[in-house]
Amino acid sequence: MVSPSDRQVRSFREQNGLDLNEEGKRIWMAQLGRLKLPLPNWHWRRSIVARHDMHHIVSGYDTSARGELMVASWELGARAYYDWRARALCLFLMVLGLIRYPRAAITAFTKGEQSRFEAEATALEKVA
Image 1 (cartoon, rainbow, N blue to C red):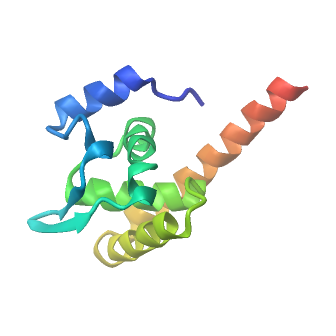
Image 2 (image 1 turned 90 degrees about the horizontal axis):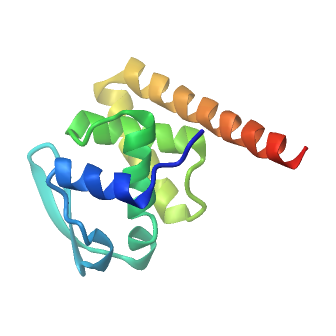
């Protein structure tokens, strides 16, 4: 699996109307569909937001409400984050995805698991 470059993440953010300096903001505008909620941009979130945007690129899920639920399911399957708070957020969003889009959420989770195994296999090939 090839990781997206910083340039690709910047381009992704520009194309989707996202803040180019999301990591530097003190307040994070959490948005899921029409629901918008200003939250503190906690350190743990600032440390993963670029990786999260990369996951949108790698997984192919957009930034719509459905896309965010699917990328969270994908991230959970891929075991993308070590921080328990990031995993808890993904789990919460996956549960919402399972309620609204059950088959798609399970598929996204499975694709995330497969991507993890692909990444591990690639890493093992480099060592061998």
